[in-house]
Length: 286
Image (cartoon, rainbow, N blue to C red; front, side, top):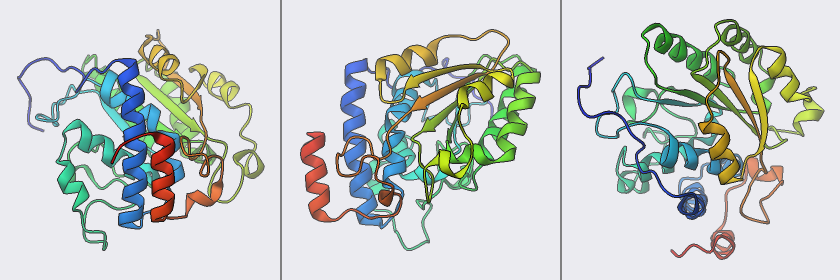
């Protein structure tokens, strides 16, 4: 890996908390429009984690789009890879690649902008190819162990879905991170209470989720996953000798009333009318 000897890392754009709310609304509209133009599903899964992604990329992460291979950069892994359309919009807005490139992307299976994040060598800003659920946290765990071994002060964060919490690899990684006291590692669960075919609690006994993380040696907290101020505060607080688990209570399809808590939008593609209706609700000009 090429070493970086430039200025110290800093957030791409340290926006005010009020600006973050505006940015999140703009991102929601872009995601909906992209879903329609690319015929890409999972729009509701994207909308539930927009506020989380916005805080990370425009307020917290110390990264440089001009030097994306700086080995001491903060790292963010989107383990719930089906929310890739949200990450694509965030990375384009953050300057990792042009917004025009994303807007003009081919959607015939030949481009890197698919339903899940591609391998890092194919798209700047991507830390890991994910989508086969349960692998993002183990990858992030490896990043965190390497950083600790090298005495780097960067943060390693991973976003998982609540359905992904069914996977045994998630808990194997949780056990190891707890035993290694990886205070540089944070996992955020996008707890929108749904997975592909049913309520998460109906599929597996997921609750009490916070107690599970605490039992594995993590500093676990719960928060409203759409409260920009509360999220920012929790994610900036340091932990001591323990990894951190944030249970972010979210709403699938957040921001658009006819999509909210409707699992049909795990698969549906918005129509032109639905895009216009969403635009009115989000109060974002085209």
